[in-house]
Amino acid sequence: MELPGGSNVASPPSSRCSLERRVEDTVNAIDWEALSAIACKLHRVQSARWGDQLWGGYNVVRFLHLDNADKTIIVARVPHRPSKGYMPEHARAISNRISSEVATMEYVATYTRVPIPRVLHFSAEVDPLVGSPYILMSKVDGVCLSTLWDSMTDDNREIVLRQVVDILLELSNQRFDRIGALFKGDGVGKAAWCVKTASSFASPEDEIESSAMASTYSSGVEYWTRYANAMLQRIHDNKFGNRGKEYDYVQVWFLRSLIPQLYDPSLDRDGFPLYPSDFHSQNIMVTFTDSKPVISAVIDWEGSTTQSIVTFAHYPLFIVDHPFWDDDHPLRLRNVQDQATFDRLLREAEQNANPGGSLLLSCLFSNCLGVYLFEQAMQFPGLIRDVIYPQLFAHVFGIVEDEEEKFQTEYYWALLEKGILKKLTSQFRRETEVWHEAMNVLGTDVVPKNLRRDQFRAVILEHADQFDVDGQVRQWLATEDPKPVSPP
Image (tube, rainbow, N blue to C red; front, side, top):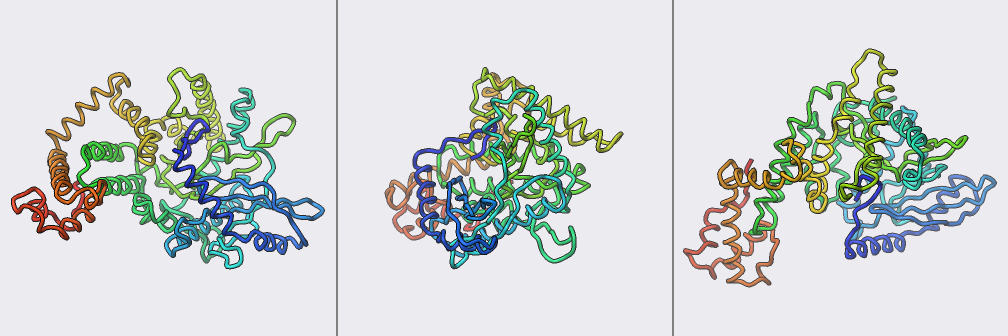
């Protein structure tokens, strides 16, 4: 999971073991000699050898050294093999994700000056010889910015930030008519590229993304409202009878209430910019010329989409405070300095590009804190939201964080006990009583925790004759809509 400050969330041991098993399964399932033969044929060489292997949350990367005069190195990237193999829904998602990434990279290479690797060959489908989809790319020069950033001088960080600003301006000038994923179809020039729903490459297991990406969108308000509604629906339908479920619901309800204020559709009247999904320091490659850093490439365009200009206008995460840093962390002051430098450089670049024109991007970037906190809280439930959410709450209401907890408690109490969510609170609490009665009668083997609403209902229907006619379970069953809709 990507975080500001150039770090990742430490996965629990079980998650790390699971990921390592997937990597091992992926590596073992691939015929690497067949993939090497494809690369050798493309470059008309007789032989090659595999070098280093890297892996991340979604892909395995290996470096293929060709036996030619230029000592060419090719980057081979293959997606992790799904745990259940390439079932149709998983194969379709991976295929579309690769197709969109390749289309995005081709667009960026053709219509911008942003340096990126060159796609040499790819198979979006499972190649029968290789045993997997894959992408073969040119290897770019340089090292990851993440390995250099913390030790760079102020002057060199400014040099890098100036180039980052240029890259973001390039991407912001590429506008599309909808929010969604970029694909290439028929047509000539830019008309060959079109925006389609990104649901086709969302993981089948991710209910929220699958729902939020089920369409293209005409505004950030429309997109994030759909995203929030999907989250509310999942809370409503899952973990039937869990005590305190109303607090999960009210958190997301509050987040949804912020959307109209955070996203102004009029700002997107010129279209939606191309948004790199993982524009972080480990995906920015740097070389040095005359002892000065030069960005040689931006890598990893997987999952990139077109987005609202408000979503686009976030500081690069390597100049944003890590959410787990202490208040006195020494890099906080450096980030304040780097953000001020970024703001100045962006303002200068916008003025030079459009003298006398609007400084919209500069304004949005320098005021992006609320949107950044909102999107982090929406996309990373659990540990991240627990840290980010109080900051957002304090930011919205203009209170210091020391006062935030008391104010938040009173705000929630008013909504849940007296206000617009009172009826929903009563429903969730009644469902807790219903679940307890069902568990006491049937036992936890039959009625475990965390059943979905439809699963719980199916269990109760199967064992309905074991419940008291006047009990909570039978009364609930008599009034429960088999296809309930989450309250507004």
